[in-house]
Image 1 (tube, helix red, strand yellow):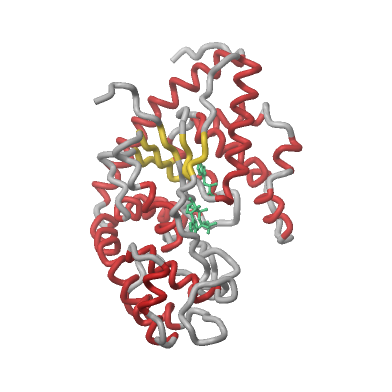
Image 2 (cartoon, rainbow, N blue to C red):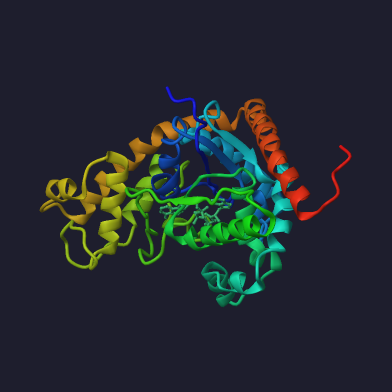
Length: 334
Ligand code: ATP
Ligand code: LTN
């Protein structure tokens, strides 16, 4: 066995609600496969979650619940590090230093920020600074690989730029992180509007299937999912609703679209949807059961988070002291 240190993987989801099957099929299922090969860090990014309107008690509850959801989805805390971002103060500290190296124009170009401001609701400067905090999440642990969806690639590019700028201004300090885009990851779409992705913060409850939805609820949501004109169960750009249901079924069954299309040849939408619901219910059953047992075990979850914090804090401290020294801060007394 090689004794070279394992590469570090870091990625995150915001505690903005219960995870959807989109989060699971598109991200967490793939993260869970990385824990044997890589040193994996999965912060629960509560500081990112306060950049948009939120309710404090809900945030606390959602953050705790997200740890249980991660574990239920197969992120084994014996093999990876689960911790709360706000517990490791280095995230905010490094973000400040990185912010002082980030030109305003670079943040103004971020499409996610532009999209959110275009909606017209009042926004705060935390939302503007969000990509710098994300860069700090990654660079604080010198992560080599960052599994992200397409929508986060621009943020990752910003993290790479700021790392390069720091290295060139203050000498080599940070590794330049690489995006890791899973080739097989599904992009699950809203059940009510397949032009949009399925999002845990979607206010339309019929649009999402949550990891803890009961079989009845799943059945109802799928039976009400929008389908397309025509009656054939076939994937294609003219059939986004049916294609979405087929790809959800692929995600849970491991079967290909082609196989499923031939199985459902001549079958009507109603029967097809019943079958999709059965597969989703079966796929989620072990996750929901594990979630329910873990979510009630406060002592266990506290233990996981405490251990996660300690490990993350030690790693973060090493980089942060280097950064502080290089930028000219006086050494701390403790
Ligand atoms: P929010 O509703 O708070 O914006 P979200 O559910 O859209 O959240 P994130 O928390 O931004 O998702 O993302 C967590 C991870 O899940 C990311 O890696 C993201 O690429 C992935 N992901 C989110 N939604 C989907 C989806 N519908 N299909 C596939 N992957 C997804
Ligand atoms: N912005 C990301 C969440 C996120 C993240 C990170 C992802 C915050 N910090 C660090 C990867 C690495 C999102 O909304 N999905």
